[in-house]
Every structure is written in C-alpha cells, then in structure tokens.
Image 1 (cartoon, rainbow, N blue to C red):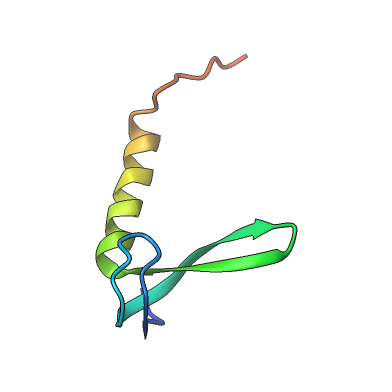
Image 2: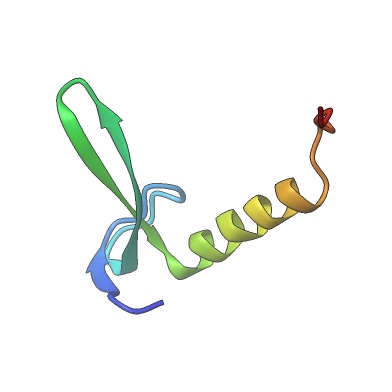
Length: 62
C-alpha cells in the first residue's frame, strides 16, 4: 500500500507515525476519512479475510 503520511491512527490512537487512508465514515455532515497505521491496517484486513472465509452465519442460497 502506498501513500503513507505522518499522522495519527484512528484504531490504536498512536500519534505521529506513518498512516494511510483506510476508509471513511459517512454521516449527515459529510465524509470523515479514517487513517490507520500499517499494523492496524494489516490486522483489519486479516479480520476481513477471516470473516469471509469463516462467516458467523451461513447464508441460505435460493
């Protein structure tokens, strides 16, 4: 992933480290970008992969 800048991680709350824009939260007042450090991004991606490989609910296909 490229595009790392110095900033604060939204997930681990550490400050002044390399972060990348990971996503955003959209609400009535607009969009708020989420910046995360490499370690947190890797953790979030692992959670995402795991959720798709082993879903809590198996959806019924019709």
